[in-house]
Length: 141
Length: 144
Image 1 (cartoon, rainbow over the protein chains, first blue to last red):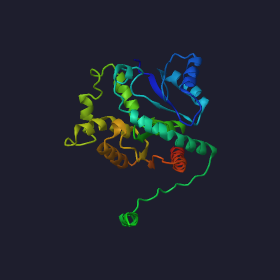
Image 2: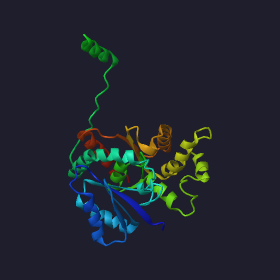
Image 3: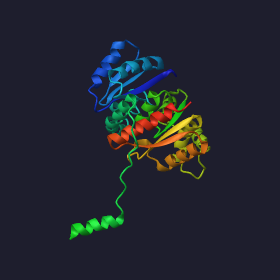
Image 4: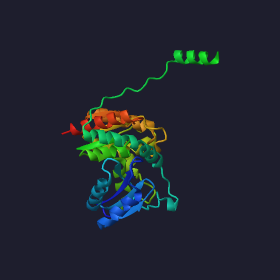
């Protein structure tokens, strides 16, 4: 494989109305020399860096704040990762978790693009052991 | 500018860094070079003996080889980085990056290099997500 190639994962946020099919059709309609594979979370595209970036710009236009992308280490269909060849997917749990998180992150991206002012929210602290004991006592009475 | 991300294969961080005009330094990029390089040793060995030697720069010989192997890939990325974003509270099942000791050593190495960095958390609700994205955006826009 030439050095300049790039493989990208296109991940659609769960809150977006864009479908993986729309993404792949958009890529096909561009007529670029890139490989595209439709997946459950979006699509994977592979080709020369220049073409991949052209395709990314078009894909992002479908829903700029709800389509996310990252580089993929192994090429599409690589026997070490492809499920068709019983490859392992060590990164899939992370992708799944981050995909779930995207419905929150896209709200953040929208707020940031609107220039909304936000302040950091402190997380609730854990209950002290003393209070936990009180609750247990109350419940077990 | 080149921005190192922790977890180094995070989709959210990779996208946000690129979205706000910087180059993310990720694990996937480093792995891509290794698995597509024709000179690599026969697959599926992604880490060569040379990599393990490189790992010695970042961790002592008494450190388990798994950590050194990971640091051989992550360490050079930290060396190249001009800034870093660390995202805390990753779930325990975070696949191939779930090695806590490597994670700690990478954080230590980022602090040792004294490059600008921020620490954010994985959001659990909308307000936290808005605050997280705003903090990352402000940090990235402030990098020159």
